[in-house]
Length: 205
Image 1: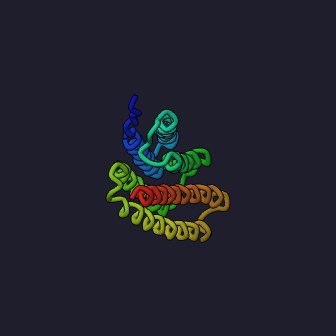
Image 2: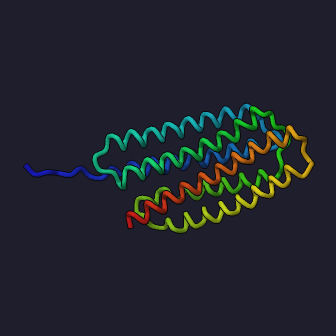
Image 3: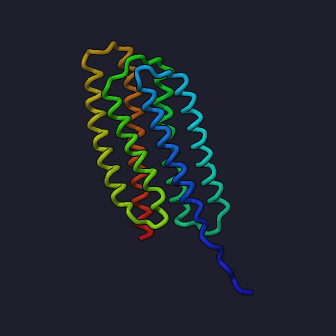
């Protein structure tokens, strides 16, 4: 009896694309959270729902890896990429949660610049995930994410300088610093995702 190899399961590409789209939604909610007239509790509820959907997609990827004989690329890389994308969503959810729990009323305008960087990273990641299928046009992705991460680092330093300028009360500085650090963490998490994509592309080339 001839041995037949099952075809590679291509559903992973769709799941990674779905996971990245959750990040686009999360970044959009983060931008809403920074609006002057934002209903923080309502936005936080929608963010929790979005984060839950993202978790479900992550779990779907893990279940599929565990039940698939031939994966489109290395299993460990699939786990790493799914985990990396999930970490970005968790960091954005943390930012929204901190703003709600700390009852932050005044947000420095510099934070909006960081959220714009996050939104660009999310859009680029959502556009890049379908390209995993062909492993083409991905180099531009990780190069641009690296550039945006450098922009985020500069914004981060400027925001910290603003916080310690004496313009804010001590308690507000403490609250805002946690928010600022979580935003920086989300941008760093996007760079981690881009690095994983680069490593996968190099292996598969």
